[in-house]
Structure formats: C-alpha cells, structure tokens
Image 1 (cartoon, rainbow, N blue to C red):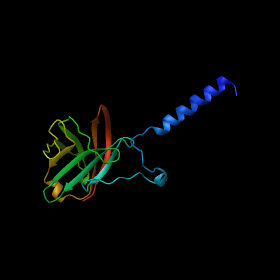
Image 2: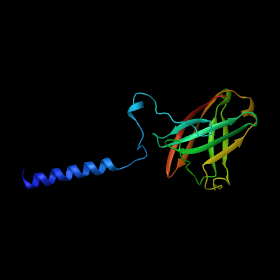
Image 3: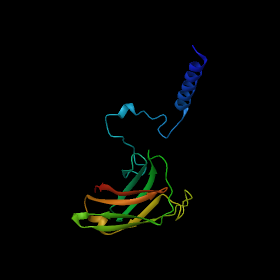
Image 4: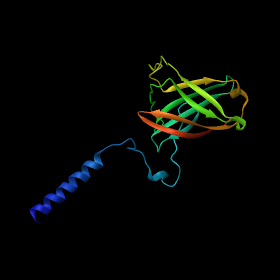
Length: 158
C-alpha cells in the first residue's frame, strides 16, 4: 500500500473512532427499540409533556383542579433535567369551550432547588375556570436559550 493511501486511510479510521467515542445527549439511549414508534418520556411531576422543537426541550403541564392552579416546568429533551429560564412568565393561549383565553404563568422561586424568579424552570397561574373545565387545547410561544419556539400546540385533559 502506498504511503499516501495508508496515511489517508489512517486519518479516516481515526476520525471515525473519534466520532464513535463522542457522547451526545442520546448516549446510552436505545433508539432502535422505538424507531418505529413515537419517542416518549415520563413527566417527572405526573403532568403531561409537550415536546418543544425536535426533541430539544419539553414543557410539563400539571393542572390541580381542586385549586385551579396550572404549573409548568421547562425540561430538557429527555425530561430528566430542569432548564432554568430568565423570563418572567410563559404566555399560553387556552381554548376552553372554543373561547380564546390567555394564561400568564409567572416564574416561581423554589428554595429547595435554589431557583429564583429570573432563574427558574417553574411557572404557575391560578384561574377559577381551571377547576371546572374539561379537556382543552391551546398554543404557546417560548424562547429557550436564544431559540424561539412559536405556536407549540398542547391539549390538556381533565
């Protein structure tokens, strides 16, 4: 084998090995097991997860019908880690009974996690209609780490 060809093959082999050793946020994650089905993760608070971007982030929504409170958490693509934001609120548009209803979920401080307003992954709103309404759908727009995700659809069951 010519020295130039041998050097080229060695470079390709080294590049391939280096790429195989790199870890991304899917490392240790078996995509083959669910390649023909929707990629699903579990909401850490028992709410409903909504994918933001293509597996970039998740928004977990949890409604407490007894208090009329809706809580949202911004999570990473696997719904394993919280993503803290500096925004003061998340604006949702809900459509209970087909009526456009804006909801402003305000940033919440959490002393247990060290999160503060201005550096938090948790947002909440209280509205009396959340106590009695059934399933409803809506949209939200959110900016996370400089990327704006517009008109993300959600449906929240009772």
